[in-house]
Length: 396
Figure 1 (cartoon, rainbow, N blue to C red):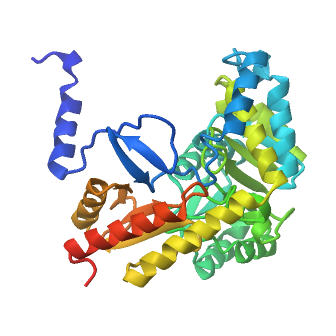
Figure 2 (figure 1 turned 120 degrees about the horizontal axis):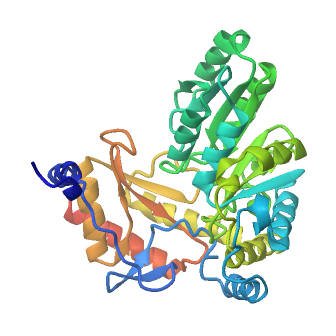
């Protein structure tokens, strides 16, 4: 009998990954995550980060992080419910609530934690969750943990959503409709006004995961709810602090009632040490910067339009994107992977996204445009897309 500690069953599974061509090694970034980076020793234009506003390496955020460490230390030393709730955490929640124009904001250590912790705290057996089929993995996991029943509606299909509500409203005490605000693979925006109207008609609650809308859509990046002017009509608005905000963490914005309940029931917050002071200090500074000026959000949109225009003229398919997330749809999975590898050889880093993350036959590279990119960098990237597209016969 073999040695149980060799984990041979996992070795076999790793071999399967290699055979399927999906085994990978992590790329290594040397230095800050910015518009041009040193990746595995090569200087490349970075079109793969969620650092939409260029905040991850911004001098003001770095200084705020250093100041917070000097005053509060490197770590908080406890969960919030014991002695890890520092005045800086309270300040962060106040600033976020003001920014989001909501009564309260409840902060988690990550966006993933936020969905897992919130959904299971607010829904239980005997309730129903109705979820868009393209919702993020953390929503899917949160729904599973809640023990509520679940129904899935086709992506942004409002008629099917109404059908599910009509058939099920009388069978359940509470119904929660969950959607991403901006869908991260295609860059399209949820049909939030229609969803909210249906929720009100059938007395259901709404829950929007605005990870990719935070800092990008709405006035100065206030998000999808602000973009559609739906304040007070969406019960739970989730935002991330790791994408446009450039640091780490997640939050739910909503009512004071929501805040009080999560304060008692959100398991990731109850059982995991609170965010480190450096992160909190930097986030507060980022939110203040957004409240001061629209320059960052305007720049990311201008850059996105410039880049899309360049790709469009060449004949690339950028799908249904309505945001700075710009998919370039290639189709065949292997070809999409090869396209990404060839771009990297010429100096552009952009990840390939293939099945099962996106439907089979819609393999793509997903370009993430930021406020930090210069027009020159974006023009060089478009030029390299053209070269590789012609070499691979993608552009005819």
